[in-house]
Figure 1: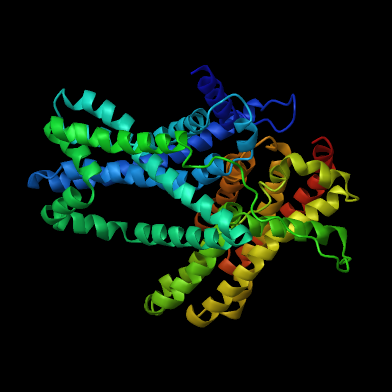
Figure 2: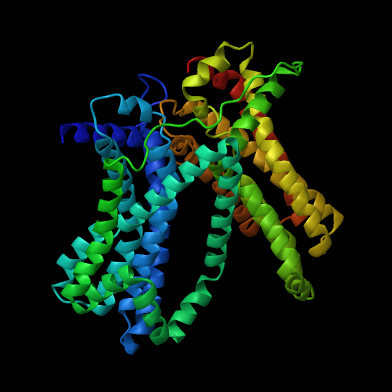
Length: 530
């Protein structure tokens, strides 16, 4: 038990506190900024789930089906926990860097797996609270359940994340085994699976209103679907709605039994926790390529990007969204754009709307924000090479632009044939998102130099949870929001859209120059001190 507590404490400390430089503490301003951004995101998400629950309860309560609002909330919570945990399960449980080291210590595989699962369970409770607090709060306000509702609710909320945790463990183990069998080919499989999951999620979000309307119209029929196809969430809702003891026990067992089976399989050795590095490359003698130093860094960074599906998908999602948006406009939006173009007042807003969408996608494409941290314990290799900080920065920036510029060009070409824009609009559609993407890449690189995370045990922690990634993401969204609000409320009254775009280009170019100078001066000093 003592070993389990020590392992869990180390795991949680590593997740919550990640110093990049020994002896350097986070400033008060950074803590306030991160706290504000965290509260903003949590508030927006809770408001969305609360509004959804209010609509469901008000529509289904007259039909005696208000329990379906709880079932939908429980299903949404479990789905969110599964999606956010499954890839972390693969990298933190079955392919963690410290797996072999821990197995050499006087600790059992069960203690190692339990400590890692408990650390992930803590995160799942946080995800669960994000969904269930507004869901249960709105439900209690509108329905006013009895006193027996609350003790049952507490136990069921503790058991609810166990089922998605167990399913994520099973899927993560399968993915790890596939990776061991395929070696380097596993990255292609992971990219395909990640892209497919994201597209399904995007399709679900785009059709969420129609699903809610269908749920309201055919609530009685869909209640039987919940009962037969989703028994954990059906019993969760019935136990709370009707105070049914049998449903309460079944809902608890649906969470506890899979988790117990998973830990038993680990204890018996059926699930291997050893680290794996895939297929090792075999060196073959061949002529060496000679290139500029920054291009060598670019190739190295590009190889890392392609070898890490989580890195590519999380930091390159904007490029995929941009092309998908342009393809969607060409596929389904051509008729709508033509209809809107017939109205002069609306026609003037088509180009600014497309520009805002492309700028948002460009702002969310930032591979530089975790690029320094991902060097990890191999940073000394980069530092000991005959590379100046300028060459390192150029190489990492080049990877970001190689990913972004083709996406912008493809999107502009698609819109040129489908949106009916003028040549000047198309030129601006290429220049402004490209320059904004460069600005965010420079900012992300500088943020990573200020807030590096070099002592990680899983790359997912760097790509998804580091301060520099959050700063670049929210900074990019803030820049797009500021440009949009400035145009809509101020500049639109005194200048045309095209003139405003040229002014924005000048402002972004000036910002890029300032950030580049900052990287070469203060950024270079920070890099030398890592």
